Image (cartoon, rainbow, N blue to C red; front, side, top):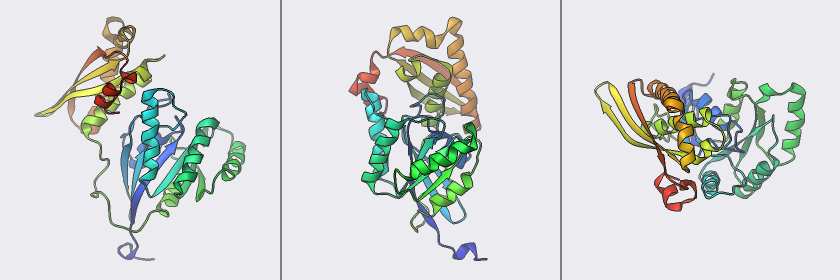
Length: 298
């Protein structure tokens, strides 16, 4: 058996792309072993490019989790999709994820066209195979193979960890030779402050309905370490006055629930006790205002 010290080391950037709700963030959290990208069962949860580093014996894979690519209408969604498409240009190879349990044909056609334009090597992961009968998977593989010259096609379940090791090996084979791009113990390039804001936003997505998740943004106004306590002040920005009561809830119960759930996740991430204070603000039509979008980091 070849000594690991004598083996070729590979490293590179891999963009994870796909339609909204294909399971990209779930996969990133699975392969890194940590919750660094937020998830929910609502599409377009991810709004930013999130970077996760996977350290292997002979490789370092830097995954870039991108927002769902779709035919965007609003200013906010167009910015989000532009961000995802730009990630494709800056990586060594691409991991395309599709949800075998649903067919977002319009989004998938848009993505396939972008992949043809990029001329990058692409691995296809057919996700959520745990949700369908086995006889559905093989026809989907054949159907997908006809759409693009994929380097490989791997059916997986990101949620349950099915065939993730096989997928990683296929991706490793596409990496160029090279040294580590980040120090060995790096998990992500995102700060704890940024991830804390994302964790708050995730709870809004998970706990509220209707238009609230898509009309909300979170800013972390202060993130201070005071002895053994992290004190965080954050604001939840909403589009309309009518949404404020929904987020606060009767007797403040919804806001309390959002805060408690987010605080527990932030404490797990930081390993410290957290005091989280949330303020709800109405920043009217922020998602349609170029200046506000820029201020909120979009």
